Image (cartoon, rainbow, N blue to C red; front, side):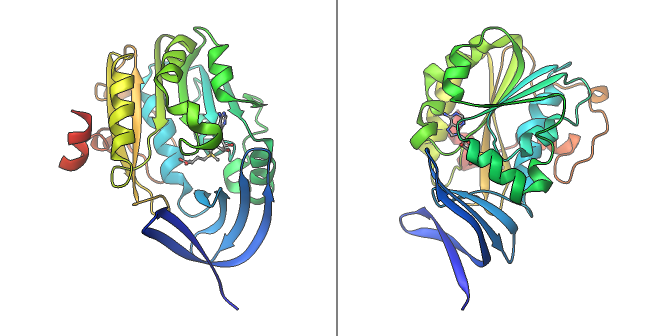
Length: 275
Ligand code: SAM
């Protein structure tokens, strides 16, 4: 009997995929965690029945969250990832030789545990000597951090449940405090088709805190609508003003130095959200 998984992206629309096997499922302290093997996308992590990452298309998101801020900053050494328990952003961060320490703070240790077990292609770098993995609330970690990070990436779930505080103006103010005086942060900001208000509100809040605030997009087929947005807030360096010689060689499958800039060229209906 063929099993299908459907993620309802709105009350009226979703995506469905063929499931070969359920590898693990449990209700953790924070969320419903499923690891499934899908025919089309390979192994996939679901949280509260939402697609988090899949072996086949994960590189788009993880490269775009990491390399846009890390190439924008001239010398990123101390990096923080809030969320990101699947390890994909950390894998990309470690491709930058300037990074001396990458701290990951995910509220749910089970995500880390089962990503290591079933998503080694994505989570396989969490044991690297430059990586400090902490299980805790990213909101609290930011509140307790002061002037210490060059780049902060917020790779959280949707603004529901444990992540609800990670989309507030108070959190962005805390990020500014946790960053050094020339720091940069990026937050995954959902999609312009179904979450236009979220994108508009995040841009408004971040603009009130960071002198340089921009939005960029990427194509992620397994995420709601397939068009995914990222908010970048920077105290000093503009992602659209990166010197050509800053782009050192790294192994990627989606990100390029040309796409670094092109990602900020927005479709009209998306650009209108950030005016
Ligand atoms: N790329 C995915 C996306 O854009 O939706 C996110 C993937 S990552 C697995 C999301 C992580 O955020 C989860 O592991 C979840 O446990 C974590 N998370 C949610 N709320 C958090 C919080 N307050 N502090 C730290 N991590 C949190």
